[in-house]
Image (cartoon, rainbow, N blue to C red):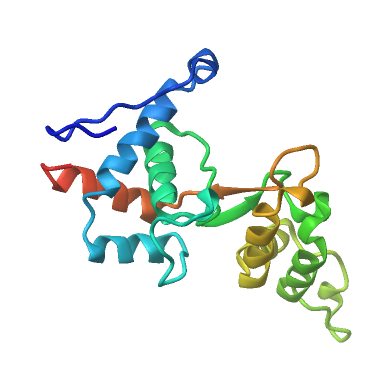
Length: 191
């Protein structure tokens, strides 16, 4: 409900307060207020930073895929550390690796294999397992691979594929996105 003076009422149910989530809820709602003041140019920057396809309507019909909801969730994360529950940004495995969740295992494994150092039959030093840093680098590249990210986004948007009743992937907020949000707030007295 919006009032003539621009104020609003936020309805919060009792279980949310009982779970200690009031700060996250209020930060999320403040994120909506700030998001409503963004220019088209600022929204374009946000879309780019969060890997939101250009042309995606800001108020999507699916809550998890709504850029407005994503902005509010990112704002909440920046200022409270709360978990982002939308499906944009960089999605990482909630289990530490796709190798432990079967959802995108094959796609992840193919990507991981493509980024691993190759075995050279003429060079004995490549005949053994790659070093820890080589493996970590290959894992990071595989996780960021566009096909892996697309699979994770699809799996996260389909709860029937979730194991143990929780999403197999979580959205992270990168440092550039955090800087963008912080600069919006600090540079605009109207926000």
